[in-house]
Image (tube, rainbow, N blue to C red; front, side, top):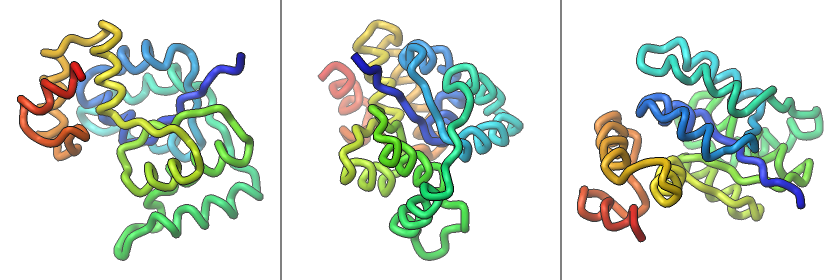
Length: 181
């Protein structure tokens, strides 16, 4: 049976570094991590920022980066244009576009872990399973690798850092119910 590879985007890796749960990410990826060159590069840069130093661990979780071929670069540009919003910088959505293009082009059995809603939509339209930071944290609770209390602490840290909310909405009671659903 072919294993499913788990590709993260940079935001997901930075979220796990921010909440000091890189070990959880490594446990749940379970040797099935992969990442594109752009995300690997962005994570290396991110690891130099205060509070995100643990992003450096990502290389041991996701391995050597996968580099896009020239043909995949065309798909990357198209995807990036589909996700870009007015005022976005030139590199916006680059890692997400590269990840989607590589998965599709190489017909990889893979899931994409991203908190970028445009990237989630584009990946789902192409049949790629999509998860968020919140889904991975919830999986940690379901598998007994993370307590509900630790989830709620991570939730508060991420919300305080303006990193979004779980799909269940806002409020600790909604989140607490979603964790066990």
